[in-house]
Amino acid sequence: MTFELPLLIFLVMTAAGAILVKDLISSVFILGTYSFTLALVWALLGAVDVAFVEGVVGAGLATVFFLLTLFTTSEKDTQIRRSPMPWTAFLALPLVALLLLYGAADLPAFGDPGSPASTHISPEYLENSVQQTGTPNVVTAILMDYRSLDTLVETIVIFTAGIACALILRKGDS
Amino acid sequence: MNSFFLFVLITLVVLMVVYLYRVVRGPSVFDRVLGLNGISTKAIVLLVVIGTVFERVEMFVDISTGYALLNLVGALAIAKFLEERGASQK
Amino acid sequence: MIQAHDSIIVRTLGRIVIPVAQLFGFYVLVFGQYGPGGGFVGGVILAASMILAILILGRHQPDSGLVTKVLQGDGLGLLIFAGVGGLCLIGGGQFLNYTHLQIPGLDDASRHFLGILLTQFGVAADVAVTGVSIAISLSAEDETEEVSHG
Amino acid sequence: MTVLAIGLIAFGLFFLIVGSIGMLRLPNVFVRAHALSLTDSLGAVLVLAGLAVYQGFSMNSLKIMIVLVLVYLLNPVIAHATIRAAYRTGLRTSKGDTK
Image 1 (cartoon, each protein chain N blue to C red):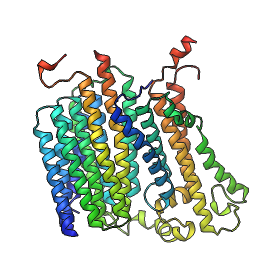
Image 2 (cartoon, one colour):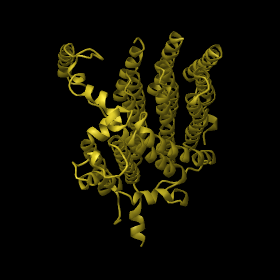
Image 3 (cartoon, one colour):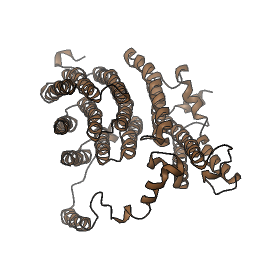
């Protein structure tokens, strides 16, 4: 589809802007824009659930958390002091890019039905999930039923993050 | 009809680039905030247009409602943060 | 401590939008089996609505009393999730295999449907409580001053 | 019906383009807020109304209407909060105004 190209160029522009800008507050704003754009790319590829999570968490909640962290800093903490780029990076980065492009040439094409990812177990999920679980959304069926133990452990990770934040950051004896 | 929607999509992305210029270059912090809000408005409209092109509007409308609500939280947090920081500087 | 926003326009909008956001969060949570969304996204939207209440109405105001109540529920969502798994164990099957939820009058697909719905509620409760808890932790509550006074 | 939808979308797109030009060309923050809060809201609302008309009367158009009302409510309030913060921090348009 021809429409992907301007969106991907826009994505790279936002990513570069978030790195190159001078202070942390602007960097947080541009990261929010980056998340919006990435969610649009996911939506365009048809991954609606991923787009929803990316948009809600990346553009909404993460921005709020970053800002609440910046609330407690002072003005001079949020300036970024950047040392000049070492000359080895100019040599190494193009080599790494070439290596990655060489590796990407062997990947299967987008949406290829014969690729390993879509021949192993996903046909079974796609065919049987509605009869077995009564859930039209396959992503929810896989996350919550076929792979529910993984989801349980992810929930434990989120819970642990909340507990760790409270232990480290909250003051007083409460 | 489809080519018309494609035209709308590409126009909206070009307009987002204009706002991105304001976010990156903007002389004051508030220019950046305004640019961010402009981009998120475009993104909300863009999602509904993508849904219309794919003929699955009922899915994409939910995402864009979530965007609109979460955008309010982020923007109000930014506004309060800048207001309190500016007040503490004086 | 975060003060209430002192603009009447923003506060009036908050009174309209916060219930809408909570309703939308529940909608995403319950209809996650038919469309995009589910427990995680619904929980995040619920957390965002409560963070919005803190930002607009203030932390220790009576209007945002829900936030204080929600903070007591730390770990409740995890308990719901693991509890559904435990019920499956009691029913004589594997952990989190919803076929063994012993509810009479339901076929296998309906049991799986019910199990997915209950675990989604667990995930949403966990994510919402954790989001509000992290926001409160990051906003640097000045409880030290209260301690030094009393 | 389709003609009405295309007309609404094109009209809204015109307002969005005008808003972007304003964002690019106007001299300072307080004037730029007009480009965002007034022009942009109207443009987005017109485009969304056009898409709702294109869907016909159904559940989908009702959902698009919810998004429309939210955008129309939230966008000006966000601009208001931002500009209020800008004014409170002592930003003024000309040097004579500064406290």
